[in-house]
Amino acid sequence: MPFLGAGAVLGAEQSPANSRSAAEPAGLALLTAPMAPVNTPLSAPSGISVDSDLLQWCLESGNIPIICPVGETRSRQSLLLDSVEVTAAVSRALLPTKIIFLNMTGGIRNSGQKVLGNVNLPADLDLVAEAQWMGHKEQQQVRLIVDLLSRLPYEASAVIASAGALLAEIFSNKGSGTLFRNAERMLRAERLEELDQQRLVSLINTSFGKTLRGDYLASIRPRLHSIYFSEGYNAAAIITKEPVLGGMPYLDKFVVSSTKKSQGSGQRLWECIRQDLRTLFWRSRVTNPINPW
Image 1 (tube, helix red, strand yellow):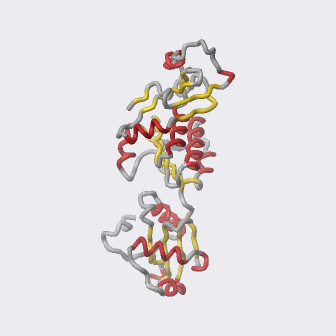
Image 2 (cartoon, helix red, strand yellow):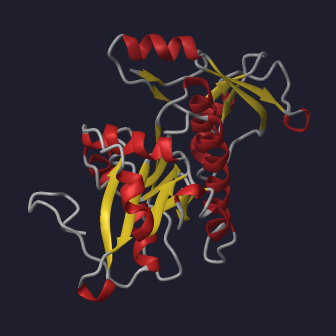
Image 3 (spheres, one colour):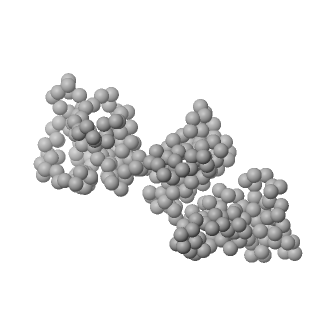
């Protein structure tokens, strides 16, 4: 359902420096819009308001709203707005779980022109924000995404992708482009006293659908190598020292909460283990999804 005028959905407050005469036709800004540079608003608004009730009604009626980035002031003037700012305003109003921005490059490219696959916040924020190879427009977009994700539910994410890869982004787990998401920190402990043992056991029991032996933690205490776990206890790996294979570390447990699957928690946990350990071994069924790793 297209909202071409968008005045019913978007409101704009015009800054005094750019205000027009009230006698000027309301449609003039819209009529001259094609002459303006791409992504440049005809008049810089000091704020964008969104009629979320109208958008909610559209969604609940089974339609996808398409919004033209044109807002209407109180004096009935039409202003061409920055589409990125409009997206941010709509997101703050609707609180979506995923926001997709489209560009021509398929995401953010590094100095080697390779698309960055994932940006985990806040861990990767400094790395991206201070990158010399990012243009001003990309830095502006990254700052906006970081601000948005800080206001949205924790599980929300934002993606910068190309239009040609949009279907892969929407319908596949692999996705496309540069994915921004809030990510739990991965922590490491070498003693059971350094973590919440009850939450660890609860994660394992829930993930495997079985109950651990009551003496499990006590049994691994003397041969514990390390435990990797996420800050919110949604993923964990228990590694022990066994008297085989020259004392090579043994991956005793690797669990990810069902609520965090497909969100990259398992991959980040695995990467932390690989950074610290050159080799390790484990036992599993041939159908276990961890084997390809």
